[in-house]
Length: 120
Image (cartoon, one colour):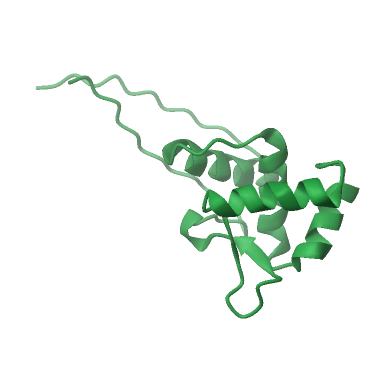
């Protein structure tokens, strides 16, 4: 019978931290590198729904996440290439978090990950 060392942690976080944790976990499990600015940008986008690209870039630069709307646009372009965001099918000017990330952003959120690390 195999012996398994089990670690169980319970942590309370606010909703913003839980959303960022989900994004970080998705990126970690899919070997996607993102910066803290990218994380903040994706967090704001997850809450924004389907904003117009130009409006969102201005919002992100006004919030101080990126220095200019152009640097925000460049970061969003990289995130799109990494599969983290997509452009709306009907209107290519709108962006949204990729639904494949399966982020939960509403209500009380309980994350229950079970991860097994084994030696061969």
